[in-house]
Amino acid sequence: MAEVLVYVDHVDGAVRKPTLELLTLARRLGEPVAVALGAGAENTASALAEHGAVKVLTHDAPEYADYLVVPKVDALQAACAQVSPAAVLVPSSAEGKEIAARLAVRIGSGIITDAVDLEAGDEGPVATQSAFAASFTTTSRVSKGTPVITVKPNSAAVEAAPAAGAVEALNVSFSDKATGTKVTGRTPRESTGRPELTEAAIVVSGGRGVNGAENFAIIEALADSLGAAVGASRAAVDAGWYPHTNQVGQTGKSVSPQLYIASGISGAIQHRAGMQTSKTIVAINKDSEAPIFDLVDYGVVGDLFDVVPQLTEEVEARKG
Image (cartoon, rainbow, N blue to C red; front, side, top):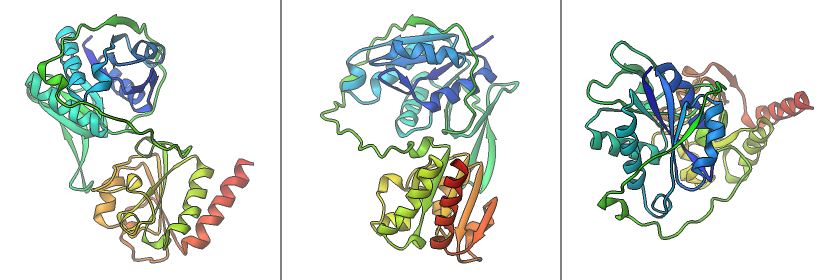
């Protein structure tokens, strides 16, 4: 059976959820071979094997932490030479897409970004994507070289599928360009205790209808009751009510959770482009003609200041 490379997104050996989702998708295409780089790479083997990795290629070097992107591209290129994979799968983060694009150029292959599903095809993997601000769904395949595909978080369920997970050292020779852009400092992200926005299974977002930074507390209360991440529309971010890092939309972050709750968001195309691939969408808006209602699975016409607190109380009551 053909082997499929999966780039591992991890923090000091703790594998992040999007990578486990990629292993689920990789098993549809062949035998997953994980590539773990940097500090703690060998510590990823147990989790990767539990979720289907037949092999784990590891390599640690200071270049991965000290320099941007290129050392990881060098390593993936080396892995492609070592494995001759049927495809290379990479999480669809900002860094992941840059790695994938550079790798595709290096190995002379086509690339597909932001896939939301993958299936095996007679002529190679077939990827499902959303196009034109998620107004259309397309299926695509790479016609030249080894397909390099980035996949959005929450595109597949994490499934345990124990495999050998044999750890093998990856032989990497860094290119001259590997040390071109040096990392000069890092500032730890301040923890909110909530899931990462792009990886969360549930997202609760607020928009212009929240009417002030102080009122985002009711959005946060609902999110915390559901164990969800908090998002915001561009209007709310531009007004200074919530940080830009939480913006959902074409000029913010794209999310694809199992459940997306939009409160006080009209549903402009800019916002829809960032959340339209969510599996279930619920909107709360007092304007029954708001465009968001054309998109939703469930809509509540009402004042969010009445509806959201009641919803939070009901969630807490059922949890209790």
